[in-house]
Image (cartoon, rainbow, N blue to C red; front, side):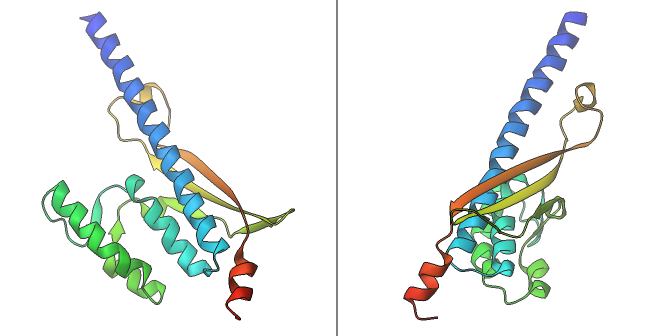
Length: 164
């Protein structure tokens, strides 16, 4: 009986580590999408929306649109809602188009120019730990994940070539 309990705890720990690794990759992906949005000339509001869409995999349960009842239906709704979310004209529209329970745990830095024409974007998430027995391995109910992306800044090239 003790052996089964120990193996279960180790199994839950391994699964939690795999989930954290995946969540870290999602945050890094979102940072890359935010940096890419800036390097092609998008403004801070578009970067905000792009980072949020990039973190959907870490965002928890979908609140808006209403829960359709299954994963396939949710995926269809997400795919249909993302273009409207990205096209929203201001912050006031966003919550009515697409929202998730953990999007409030995601934040990003303003794009930072670095020497050599590189741009850096950082994305942070206070990722909630929902795995059973997570307190055996970590004392808190969330863990801070950080993702960073550095890309060559082509912003000026795009705007200069277009005559803007």
